[in-house]
Image 1 (cartoon, rainbow, N blue to C red):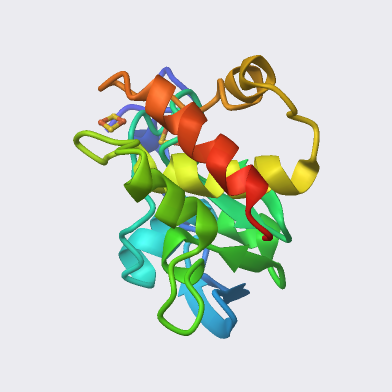
Image 2: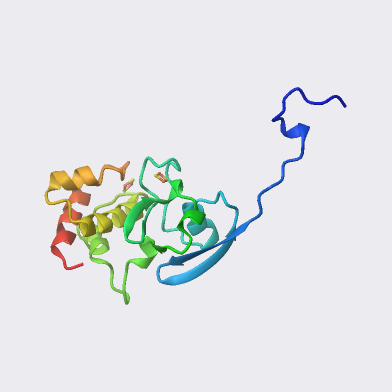
Length: 173
Ligand code: FES
Ligand code: FES
């Protein structure tokens, strides 16, 4: 067989596959150790390896916010983050927001204001809103809209989402 004219042609040489590596994440208060391929996103680690399917995959390109989780208290799109980059971090997903069976005030506010239709964007909206309130930068409806603009709602539930966040801001978080 003649050598391939293309040096990067996979057929021209064998390509070794990087080994799976251990990653430890503290997820919703529990330490979880996974052995995963180094390119596994935090989103796929949560959904496919830990069965935490509350966090949604929308665009998988960092553009819709459906995959937003809290990492050490800050909101982050988990589809653009490799799990290995967050080794040792504290991750909170929508499943971890309620305490002792009581909904988080942001979760309750979303129910009170019908702040969803299909619900697909809702876990990301709620996680993002929790961080937004902790950031303390949004004071008005306009500022809430601006600082929540990374979370897209295809159903257009925006007025209800803003109303829910305003209610939760008045609650003691
Ligand atoms: Fe991550 Fe859309 S799925 S931003
Ligand atoms: Fe359907 Fe937001 S409630 S995408």
